[in-house]
Amino acid sequence: MEETGRTTHTLAALMELRKRILNGDFPGGTRLFEVPLAETLQISRTPIREAMSRLAEEGLLDRLTNGGFVVRSFTLADVLDAIELRGVLEGTAARLAAERSATPAGLERLNHVLLQLDACFGRDANEVDFEAYPNLNAQFHTLLVTLSGSAVLQREIERATRLPFASPSAFLSGRTNIDVFRQSLHVAQEQHRALAAAIASREGTRAEFIAREHARIARRNLEYVMLENPELIISVPGLALLNS
Image (cartoon, rainbow, N blue to C red; front, side, top):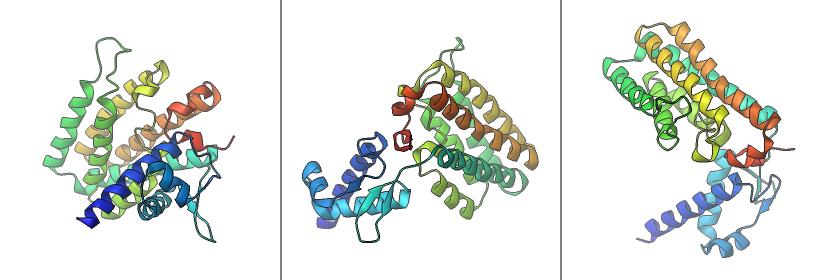
């Protein structure tokens, strides 16, 4: 019972600290201290320490050589590199799925999610269900990696997407329900369909190309936020950590 309670407190601390970091409550370079955090969150120091260790593994905190943790900050180049890396890894996963691993059952699951994604779009071009789409989009990308049959790739993609701005759903939430992002979803869905078709047809090179191009939608959305509409930075998880 004691161990279960500690795990619950650690999870609560993890979720709260992650939310505050991503919201920009703790700017990059901020050193986090166990005692003040424990008092603020009304949780003992041990779960706080364990939560900060987890956040360091996720890449949101850095360990200091003399002990303790500091909030990481990122450059625009870091974000672009993270998105590019995800595209390369997912492209490899798509190629492997097409060439050697996708089963009929796996393809059926992928197409089932694809149909659910289709249902997120209304007759009006501007009508998109931003409540359902992000979760279904995440499911599609998870299934894509699973279809590769590679535990190594799966592990590396999970590592690459721990940073929230590198996630396939980084720009998808009710907080970012704006015209530019809605329009990008129509392109993304066409790419989802083409990707599923390429895998089913065992066209590995084509599947890889589509998956890599698909990741570049996130890059274009990021460039829109940073260059044309910077007030949206606070709406995209993690972008508050960018250096000016």
